[in-house]
Amino acid sequence: MKIRVLIFCVLLLGLAACNRGNVSDVQRDANGGVDATVTLTEQEVNDAVVEALSKQGNPLLRNPKIDLQPGQLLINGEHERRDGKGTVSGSVTVTITIQNGSLLPQITKADIEGWDASDSRIAEFNQKLTDAFNRRANRDNKQITFTAITISDSNLTFTVNIKRG
Image (cartoon, rainbow, N blue to C red; front, side, top):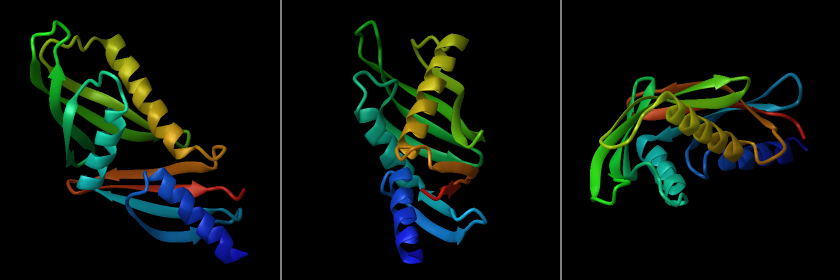
């Protein structure tokens, strides 16, 4: 039984980490669930962002490149101008925190020529990021709760609790 629960939890972690990353420090909690730490390299984060943006019809940034920095992600890419006059380089800085067990990504800075970075547009984009992250992680009846996240210059590491089903 314990092995089946552990295998199930590792599979859920794989889904939460977009089938990427290194799972470590797996421990059973007092309620029969499992706590585990998932570490994604800068390349794995980049691959996940590229995959997510490729599924959008008109993403804010094309050909994104992620630069992990302590406490934040810097996403550089190309922005297709809405006036049809080609592309321009741009960047978006994103922080990710945890709120009520869910990931809360937020744009803290946007530097894209021709893109109106008004408060309402940033709030809308932040909400889309939040929904996408949490939809991906909680496909299994909200059984995954995020408990910690750390962004260094080389890794994005988060700790999750997987409730016993």
